[in-house]
Image (cartoon, rainbow, N blue to C red; front, top):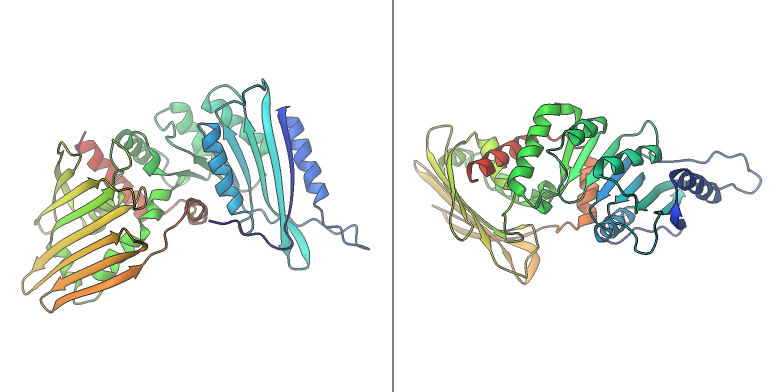
Amino acid sequence: MAAVVSPRTERQSWTSHNTSIPEVLEQLGRLQVQTRPDKEGMPEQPHPRGMVLNLIVVAPSPQASRRAVALMDSLAGHHPFRGVVLSQGSDPGYPGIGAEVDVHTSALLDAVGVLYERVSLWGIGGDSEHLLNMADALLIDDLPTYVWWVGDPPLHEPWFRKAIANYHSLVVDSADFIHPGPGTTALSSLLDELGDGLGVSDMQWIRHRHWRELLAQVFNPPDRRGLLEGIDKVEIAYRRFSDSGPVPLLTGWLQSRLGWALEQASTDPNGAIEVQYTSAAGRPITLILRPVQTESLPERDLVALRVSTEIPDQKLKLSAWRAREELGRIHVQTVTAGGKVDQLRLVDLAERGELLLGCLMSRGRDPIYRQALKCAAELLVAVR
């Protein structure tokens, strides 16, 4: 996602390889003053600050920190917030705390407002708890604070479960979980423990949105809604991106929305997961979650989906798949008693910056996601 830069956007920055939090705050204040839009003849004009939230990013390495900074900077022109990036790595050759302060200003009608401020820190030392505590001094008071934990958050740690309750929302990408089973189970239990007191946004949930929309639209016509009760088999193929498998959020969504009960699950030697459900009407349902090897399709996304359903006097088979040569399209085929219909569905392949923006805008309190996460955790426990 390219950064949106206005012709009236200005950037001021400061970097040090040996600094302290008080000096960082002093430099941040200095850059704010330098970008103040005092107009000629109006030196007393207030400096508008259009901030809407704080975002703390905890990255496991300098490389991950740089990627997170690039994503945040890509939002600078159209989403006002202060970001604090904390890297758990050090800067070789420099013994102290390193810091970079960035202030972006953009036009607001006939004035100029600070839309985006970022403070990046590295070489802090100590554990993850210490990192999170250091960020508090750099936040803007009275704004909601989001915590984006890159990779695996320490969800099992008592200090983390206590500390995260003080923030508005946690942002994760469950596709990056090194151990999806324990991570998903811990995330689900954290939400059970904290309830609506903590929001959680998951980039993987947003990444799969077009697949949920596709399924909803296929069964939305009134004459097809009864077919939801007749689903007997679902197959989902995904691009293999780790040896430990996916977090099955789409599977959890189907189970939670259609009222299926999980009966048993097993994994074959090739990594495919076969799950047996029972529908609310007592019908057996087989779901297969299968990894495929391909380098030409998007990482972390689904590759294909098949659903078969039948009720008296009516049946339907749905097949949807990505074409290797057309990444922004999904081929959709529905077969009913009336014949076969082929369609080409355009989809927006969200880049990581757009996924982050979606997480920030959702506020992390989607009850449908929470139900899907709970069912996904139930499945991953069953296949351990």
